[in-house]
Length: 138
Image (cartoon, rainbow, N blue to C red; front, side):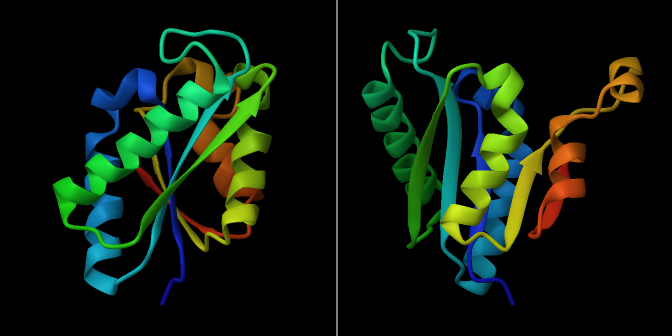
């Protein structure tokens, strides 16, 4: 089976991730697989955190909350800092998957619209370029 699950999270939009978070947690619990919650933030202050250290602490707290909520034993988090997350998100997540040893990535997505026909979605790009298995949850 899988050795490591990675779940990318956007702390500014947790309400949009519930289905993917539950799916990833269910798989982790069923098969006893560790989960790494990965977040990408800018080095500049944002609505989520004032600095990278605060972002990392909030992401770590989020991972602990998920572990308690779903009864997960093995969780960790990885805060990735980018100069421009809107531009670097895809490559940053690919790098995080490699560094965490993730062989399964559970990602949230949305129903494709016109923009996705012109530009690739983050989940679509990730699935096309990752060595890991990717489960896209809508």
